[in-house]
Image (cartoon, rainbow, N blue to C red; front, side):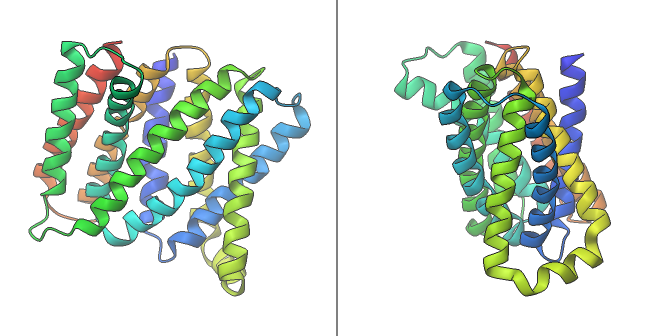
Length: 275
């Protein structure tokens, strides 16, 4: 049941990211999405026990990394194709976790993990070179996004296990990240927020609900089963993203990017289930 729900969450994640990529104002769309998280977080906080003190450091680290993640994500979508930058950012994240564990925590790499890394690397390289004209700017932001994903996944996975329930941790996480994004937008774009909300509230509400649901499902799954398989299945969203970008957004390079995303997804699956 957990794996099936995480797979559904992966689809949700690809859809809300595509809605933000297709938006005319990505910052305000992100603000609207995170505002749904504020509502969710407030409801959870008033209905659940206080978060445990031992989980607070992980919560604060996750919030800081998520804020940087949103900055990198907005700029990746600003400069690059959805079917290119999304699989790169999501696909590299598990490799980052693996390499960090190997370099800094003396974790041994198994042969399957090395194979998975090669598959992901091949897929990511194919995606990076899939445009006729090589543009490094979106790739920089996509790679930075991958590091952020790896960071907040580990911090959240550890924090949720120190909380009384995944509801408590996810509620505080959504509230704090939402308030930080909303505050930034009020400082930068206060004059246009109301008009944007009136014009795009339906798509923004849908994206917000999908975003909150996708992350809540992932946190719930990580509180019940091992983090690595959850992260692996969650990142199969790269296939959904390439399909949405190639056909839904008419970005082109359909078969090349689908093949590359399959390599990435296969590598992630091997990586997740080899532990």
